[in-house]
Length: 231
Image (cartoon, rainbow, N blue to C red; front, top):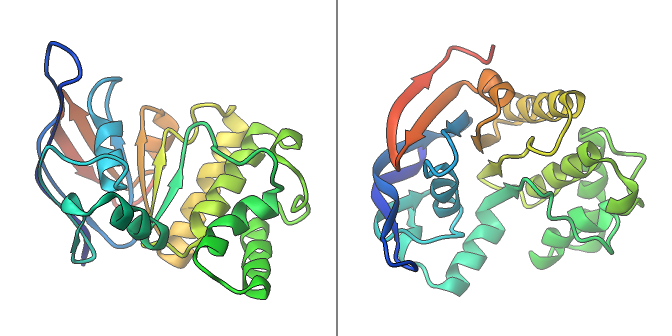
């Protein structure tokens, strides 16, 4: 069953004298439970595509449907609400709130959703334990390594029980061991809980784990390869 349907979307930036066609007529579908990587060189359009999937950017033309909702024409406030309940994000720069502890960072989105305090706390402990940080609940980001901060970011992305998680270059600032640990955690969550993960990356280690690799060049899909399982 497709949870995401992309129909002939384009994104044209006109801020400069020369128009930039970042995404140029892409059609794409994602099924529930996928572990997919969108890959390509810098400037290929992969991050722009991911941002439009997440409602962080709007298409110039075309249609993006997520769980029967066309997000292409939602207002700013509607998109904020839609993201809150449907999409988890993991960014290259972690984007944790520095004055909050790991526990508070993960709880924050559930607080926005109006979840009761005891439910928030129970889910936060469960999530941080699932990413190997059950003993670091009260640590602020400055006291955590890069790999640990990114694992907090994964727990935070899952806190809202999203339909899928978008990860933009999540391993870019991590060493090999931290990358391996992070990818193992996300792969386990994908397989055990059927959480859909979509990456934008140029990291070969992510491509190796992915069960689907979509290559983008000059704003167009040049290949879409499904594997029987991550390698």
